[in-house]
Structure formats: structure tokens, C-alpha cells
Length: 460
Image 1 (cartoon, rainbow, N blue to C red):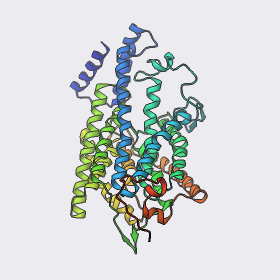
Image 2 (image 1 turned 180 degrees about the horizontal axis):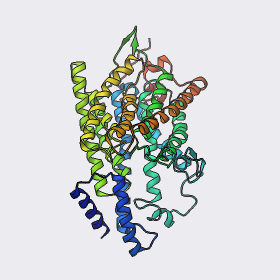
Image 3 (image 1 turned 135 degrees about the vertical axis):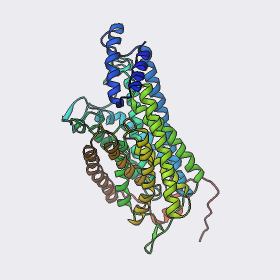
Image 4 (image 1 turned 90 degrees about the horizontal axis):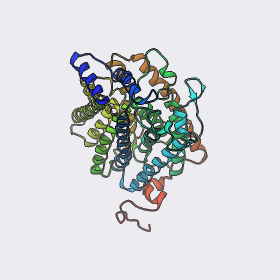
């Protein structure tokens, strides 16, 4: 009965041709559901048990999809770097997931969603651990008394998967020359303290949501991607370029060793984005989810075309690595506004981000900033663009408010990340020796090769 009511309301809105945001639609549905469910199940319930199960199941499927993104990041980074560093790349991407989930359990979740603000709207903390000391099956955690769309545990795990993503972005940018232990220390600090703290400004109901027109970042163009991107930029500056990248004023390409692996990784990330954006609807609402999946897919497709046109025109040959990064650029760009921009706008956002990503990669090279995988171009530049596009393509949100949010995250995340990297550089050191870099981090850091038997060393 509730499902039918939802569908009828959607049909009425579509029939009347009224432009309505997903957020407004959800509010309308919520009032209708509360009235109906209150008659049937009591005032504390807002959806039927069946609908709650459907919502929660969809959210768990999205968790699985976001989890696969970590494999996508691992294969993208491995494919775009050299064979002698493949084990190191895979090791970092494996441990990052563990660090992200454990630090988010320790304190990240309660920093991002504080019940008590120590500095209102700016900093809050609800204590260490998760579950608030209640039994795992307490009704306040696992029924719609907690949320109409999912349980407390689903909420925690979904957000925990996002947290680990921010550190993964940094991994690719500093690849092939960063010491393993200092990098893992950086990840632990950044994911445990910085990512959830700045995330609370928006998703935790903080100061950027307090205005009459709030800052809008649907699934994290800024809160996830540019937060990771600012850290990536700081890391690149502090650690310096790889040996042989810039020689006598010339830019020397250092090619990745496995383009098939790169391609697999991009398609895994595209698949995972259906959970990343689709899950950010925070329920199985058929109208909201299906629309978000459409805008997400179209932006990715347009990103491919935008990057192809530019790379083919500028480089005189169609570059597969640029096209694949164009796909990711489109996905990052649409993440902020997938719920509130039109289909045409989603295509435009993808095209622009895909094209800009190509120019951005070239720009960072000219600035002598060595990013082996293009993480700063895809996640930082396109994360910023996607956030600003919400204020351009959606009538509900203000460009100036979006700009204010982008600047706020930049002036906090970049200096803090730079400071962490700088302190690590001056204390334990963050860069491997020249000899180790030339031989490969697989041998130097791990004592094992990803492709055993393919490297030969002489005694000379």
C-alpha cells in the first residue's frame, strides 16, 4: 500500500510536468508515509517493515558496489604505473581499506555525525567506537526508529567505505617513490581525523548547511574527491617528481605497464559508482535511485567522448589513458549534483569534465608536478568543477554558496595535508632512495615481485 502511494505521487508529479528536486519529493513522500504508517504501525514508525527491509537491502547492495571500487582503484593505479612497483601499489590499496574502516570505527563516524557540537556547526564528537554501547539488535539501531532507509550498522558501513576512498586517491598521486610506512601513517591521520571532521560541515549537519540556501554535495565531489585531491596535491609537492620524469627542462613520459588492467579498473569504478551515487539517495526510492543512475551513467559516457575529442585533437592520436581518465572525470563531476541537475546538464558536465581532465594532466606536467595516475586532475579539478556546476545547472542552489564550500575545503584540507607530509618528511622521511626507486619498490619495500622472473640483475 505504501509502495503504491509512492508510485502514485511520482506519477502525478510527472504527469503535471512540475520540476521538483529529489529532496523536495522525498519530503513530500515522507509526510504521506508518516500519516499512513502512523495509522498502521504507530507514531514511531515511518515506513512499513517490508519497505524498511527493501530500503536497507538496497543500501547494503550499494555497500558491496562501493567496496568493489577499491579493487578498481588498485587496478587503475597498477596499470598506470610500472611493473616494478605493482606489488607496492596493490599492498597500499589493500591496507588502506583496513585503515579506513578501523579508524572510522574508532572515531571517524562520530566525528562526521556528532550528536554534540563542541564548536557549533564546526566541530563535534560523540565519543569513541560505534553502537553507543547498546546491544547490536537494539530497536533504536536496527529499525526505522533509527532511519526510514537503513539500520545504524548499514549507515556506518556505507559511510566507512567512502572514508577509505579519500586515502586511495592520494595513493596513486604519490606512487612509485613514497615510503610505505610514512604513507600509511599519513592515511591513518587523514582518514581518522581530517576527512570526517570536514565532512561533518555538510553531511553531519554542520555550518555549511545552516544558511537559507545550503551547500549541496549529493555524494561527494567535494567531500570525498576534492578532500582526497587536496591531499594528493600536497603530497606531490612535498615528495617531488619521479626520477627521469623531468630532464633538462623536458617532460619525459613514464608509461604505465598494463593498459588492460587499467581498463578493467575503470569499468570496476564505473560499476561501483552506481552504489556510490545510487546509495546516496539513502533509500530504495525508485524515482530518486533510477534518476541518479541515469545522470551518473550519462556523465561517464560524456566524459569519455569529451576526453577522446580533446586528446585526439591535441595529441593527434586517441589516447586510451586519457579516455579512461575522462570517464572517471565525468563520474567525479556528476557526483555533487546527480540528484538535482537535468539529463542535458549531466551530459554537459561529463563532456566538460572529460575535456578539462586532459588539459589538466598537461597543466600539472608543465608545472613539474608529477602525478602518475592523474588523480589531481580527475578528483581535485573535476571534484571542484562538479561542485560548482550544481550552482550553475540547478535552480535550487547558489553558485556563490557552492564556491564558498569549495574554497572552505581547500583552505583547510590542503594546508593540513601539506603539514602532515612535511612533518613526516623531516622526521622519518617519505621518499625512498634513488637506487630503490630505480630498481622498483616491489624489491626495495617488499622483497617480492608482482611478476616473478621478469627482472634480471647482474653482479656489476
